[in-house]
Amino acid sequence: MKLFDPTSPPVPRELRLAARPEALRGLRLGLVDNTKYNSDTLLGKLAERLRARHGTTVALTSRKRSPSHEIDEAAVHALRRQADLVISGIGD
Image (spheres, rainbow, N blue to C red):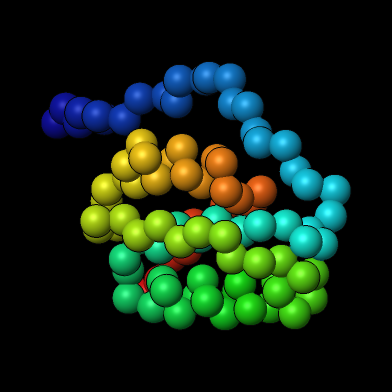
């Protein structure tokens, strides 16, 4: 019997992480709701905890068309201009 293994090894690539803020105090949050069930609830509760503990504010919320779609370029530019930190939420 011949067995075919369709997997292939991962292709290494350079990954550049975003700079981490030294502190959260007073940062403007951008929220990305991926439209999954409870995503908006999760993001809202997280934003409230960050506000209470660190004085953050929600500057902008963007909502995806569906979980499998990305946010559009206009939303990306708005998040870059208006938010210091972006959180993308999941649900279920």
